[in-house]
Every structure is written in C-alpha cells, then in structure tokens.
Image (cartoon, rainbow, N blue to C red; front, top):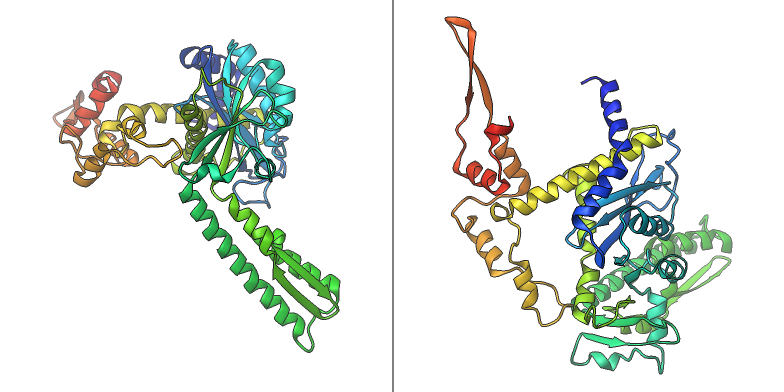
Length: 441
C-alpha cells in the first residue's frame, strides 16, 4: 500500500465516524442506560498539529505536547465513541460535548453517566448534567469528605466500627443527592504505608539539604536559595502540607505537622460516592459497583496505549488525521473486546466473575477470583481440556493456520490451494467465534 492510499483510507474513516458511532449506540445503548466516561492523553511527536498542546501529562512526558481524548463505554467496557480534544483541555471541560452527543446524536433521553471525581464536578453537575436531565454517579474529592467528617458532621467514623458501607445525607451541601460512604481497609493500609514512605523520603532529602546549608563554604546561604531547594523537595514528594519549615540566613529546620497527619489518617480508606439516582432505581450496592466499573475504561486506555494497540507514537500533522488515528485505535479495541469475550473459555479470563461478586459480603470488598478460574490457572486447561493461554499467544497460534498455493513441478501453470490442518485448539477457537476460516480466506 502506498502512503497516499493509507491517508485516503484515514480520510474515508473519519468522514464516517459519526455514522459508525451512531450505529454502535443503536446496538448497545437504550433509554435508562448506564454509560462510563473517562479521559486520557497521549504525547505527540512533532509540533505541527493544531491539537497538540502542553498540558497535564498522564504519560509523565511534560516535555512533549499532547492530545486529550475521551472514551464512552457501556457498563461492560465496550467502547462506543471517542472524541479528541486539544492537549490543554481540562477533563471536566470535555463533559458537555459528551452529554450533547448522547442526547442529540444517539437519541438517549434518560441515562446515568459514571465519571471520576475530576470529571463530574459540582460545577459540571450544575451547568451541564442537571439542565440536560442526566443522572450521575461520581465520587467526592478529599476536601468535601473532610467537610462531611468535621465535628457534628453527617459522616461519623463510628459508623464503620463493624461495617464498611453506610448511606448518609447532607441536604445543605448536596441537596437531592445520595451519599454512599465506603471504607476499604486494604486501601487504608496501603495509603498509610505510602504516606509513611513519603514522609521518610522527604525527611531524608531535607536532611541532605540541611547538611549542605551547614557546610562552611556552602552555596546555599540566603533564605531564597534555601527556600528553592526545600521547595523542590516538598513539591516532588507532595508532602508540603505535612511539614513546618523554618528558613533563615544559613539556617534550616523542620518538623512534622503531627495533628495534620493524624487528621488525614482518620480518613484513610474512606471514599464517598455521590449519585442522583433514587434508591428504588439503584440500590446502594449497585451504585458502588457502578462506580468501580470505571476500571473497565481504564483497562481500555491501557490496551490502546501500551498493551496491544499502541496508540503512540502519534506522527500525523493534521487534526483530521489525528482524529482518524485515535478512532481507528478505538475500533480496533472494539474488535479486541469482542474477541476476548468470545474466546474467554480458552483464556485466563475469569468467566465466573459475576458469581464471585455475588458471594462477597460487601461491594466494597475486593472480588476474589472464582473457583472456576483458580482451577483453570492451576491446570492450564479449560473445562473441555484445551490448553489455556493469554490472548496474545492465542492470536499468534491462530495465525499459524495458513492457505498455501501449490504448484506442480511438471506442470508449472497448474496450481491448487491447500489449507493447513487446524489443531484442536484452533477448531475450538473458531467454533467460539462462530465462523469457518476457510470461508473467509
């Protein structure tokens, strides 16, 4: 294929993006549906594209311009639509176009939008979701949780002495909304460990700066110079709120803010889900699980960016070709998602996850692997006795089925087709996919 033909194919695809997305929405979305939405970014090669801007880099490449793209998925994680934004677009600023797309283009009058705390903010609820009549499920940020947990506030930590889930109300702060407070003890332990590691690392770096200051001919003498060095340490560890620092000419001292640290420790493992859905339509456990389902969008981003499809590097120059490139990656992941679902019995996927979730004592608790997948991992065999493998390995194995064009030495013009004999695993895979490979070659 020539380069010109590849670009013509991209132009053809992006011109039909709206029609393709509308078709996917008609097939997989209906009124009252729960839709997952999240945003990611990818750094850019070059500087000529009008979409490339410097912004918050999720790839930790602040030296490169980037693009931002938002992905709409079903609750199961199946991608429906994607939209590309300028690289300096804030997450919450992408929300209004998604609401308009779902309401106007897809014709969905009633829906529940699930997004993270940086996406569905109070401002976006007020300006975008409420006027459009859209319900939401999201999570509160730390300052809002601290306000709820203040003295005489509606969030009393004694509620969690013998449980990990409670529903409260705060009509003054969140009128007409349900607040579901969750406490994950495993998350609390992890946050405590991480905080202590960061405090210790910060103390070590501050001690290094202090030793430099105390040297006889140190370059760090003035308060401004010392302040710059201390600020670099505190900013890199994100621990400025936990230290009191005193700086003077040739002098540096610090101490931990014990009360601040203890106050933060009180809320370790606490997160609060906020939703406008009434309890008769979405109970507490379902609301918690719906928010946790956002991890499926993150899985889609991970597959598109690093694991399978590698959306990076982006080398296109025009906005149209960049949008086509991202849309092509979304469509590829749509196909991959379908393949993984169909081939799940031959993969290490947990096809008994729904049963395992039903056995949990609380939706806050981590879902343990089902007995079915434990047996599959232990024996490396499926229920039918076929060898179980990863998705990538299975695709490579399926690729060994080939069509050969044979030529007879004595009659060079006489040719015939000979297909390689499929293995039992290949036969099982194509049976799950419901097609005969000989008919599509």
